[in-house]
Length: 602
Ligand code: GTP
Image (cartoon, rainbow, N blue to C red; front, side):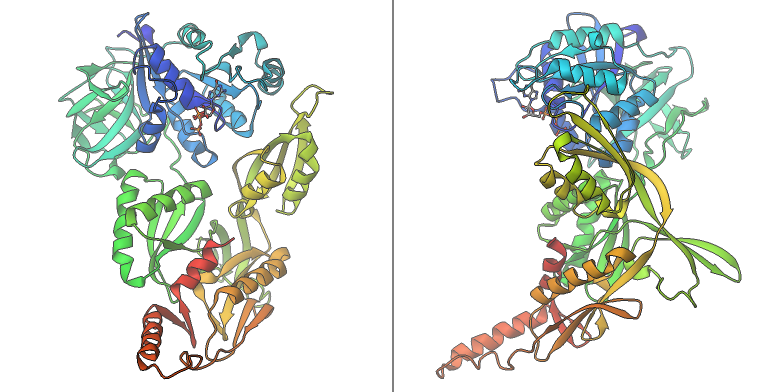
């Protein structure tokens, strides 16, 4: 295949706007997969998503074209993955649901594609729906993206309307990749996955030269050398080919054993023929941290084993061991965002086959210490390590700052007031809004932007946003650096003893509210003891909130009437069984299940 018959493209869209359905139609129309009975079609792209394979080839049989569809993830947490997938493309289909209009992620994916200089083909999907308003949404796209309504394709991926026009547009509008067959080999590594038998499988896009089986290649980044043992295209499953040529996208296996060797954004070249590396990528940055513990502390090794297995296929998770007096041995994990954390938790519980205790999510804070040797910046991602900032006189802490994001919310105008209130109650600043529709339109869509602390959106912001907008609001955010902030560490005491696993970092203005809510929650789930237990929330030396757990009666069998010896024995035995799984915090016995309940309830 010469370059000029190749087209490398992605479908970019807000969640649920029909990316997988369109991909399936394109694959069917081109004969890549068989057309299935109505409703029976397994979504190939979704399956690939699960397996984290992101490049598939669509061969258009009618023309002699080779179309490479490169998948991009749809969620905010994976914004950096979108940008790396786009690096292997020359064009993108911007898919927008004609009944929903432009949504928050339509904006972010559009900008990501625009930044990379890709040709954008605007496509309105779901025009079969009675609620579809193609003209209105096309006007939104014109106002928001500067797209000429004449360029907008109207399709229904579900019923198959207009799919042919999409193929035609891909071929006509998207430029072929450039790349010289006779130049030295230059392959851009944009994704990788792990195969138990073959090791690391990398997805590459060939920028120049030809790659063949048996070639000796080297990484610009690690300088390590490999021999190509397998290569081919994804059609949509792996199909071995004799070679990969400029402009082509395909997979290679090259006895790479550790997934950590495959650096996304790396450039591969022939051994002895070095090339200028492609501009690389910023490595994924963990933005949300949490401790993960087994419910039964004896299971730690098994849990760690499961975590290790999962990180083989998801390297964006950061892992370190940590221990807690309350919960024993555990791991501290870093995630790209809360969705990433939820997905991982789900996979972990499946893999490990049991529930895990996950501590409250924490963002990475920047603490500047000052002493006679000068200043020192420490990133703190565990509340236990957060210094006391209330002690102004003796404190060595010069400043604390927290990560902030630029948030975008798109919502029908009738919810504007609610949304602004919600944002302000989550410490939003620089709030701004504008109309996406022409003035006078009924239920016009509004785009609201603001700056917010990341910590405010890692807990329940998204749920509240959805419920307060009856599900209509869409939301996206991007990293906006760090901002100094008045933060304090909140510690919870049981009978005067701090429980490390429950420590939190909160904004000064919220300490009362948070302290009271947590103390109430603890009061509800902590079992009564033989003595009275004060439950306190403290900040610095000050007690912010307190509840008292009253004592219970000493003998569990006392309430049982009659003299059945066996029955009493059984109760005592049950009690012993319960004891074994207890954690002693100071003088208070706490079952690990209590932590589970505290930390998993919102
Ligand atoms: P994510 O994988 O979550 O990002 O979603 P997606 O963008 O891949 O969307 P998907 O293809 O899964 O479609 C979302 C829903 O919209 C599904 O229920 C589809 O059946 C439906 N859908 C997709 N295209 C059309 C269409 O043209 N018309 C109608 N009526 N429904 C459609």
